[in-house]
Image: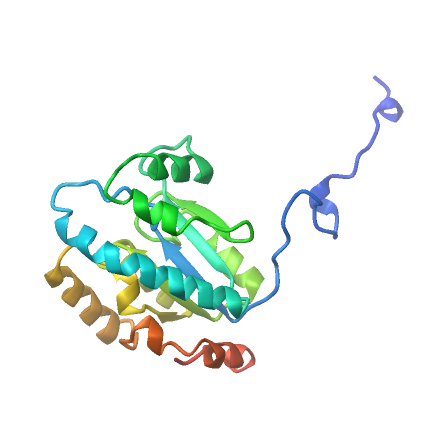
Length: 221
């Protein structure tokens, strides 16, 4: 076939304008909210403690997310694939929401909005095997607020990787659910002493102050 007979169509990826069928929410922001495994069945042996915490953590995350949206702070969901490699975010959300599992109420309470970012992770950290670093660079994020489940596992690993990437990290204690009281104490101690994360609750978080530091290096609480 003659090459001249093959029509050339410029791919969307080469266009500067946003695709019409995709919601554009690419405003740069010094701060981003990372919601880790909040779409979660919480269905495992020894889950009594984390379920109890989730009943208080869920509403706290919901209020923090609402505050972030008011300040135009991007919300990023990073969700474990639970070993289901053919799943997409929508399928995982629907499965958990309709599962009648101990954590299904969280999926209903914390349903992602149309403009929220959605990532799937294969392991504990939200950074490992995902495009999170590239997304944060695109947004110009210098401070990452981490919340979700479990505080002593996936949230801790994610906070550690943020620290390793020179990103300032905030982990509100009332916005993480942990597997036990001892696990919470150990995780919070490590985050304070090793990752230099200041202990605080979401109600003590000054979002406006964090945003003001976007031109002055990593934000401060």
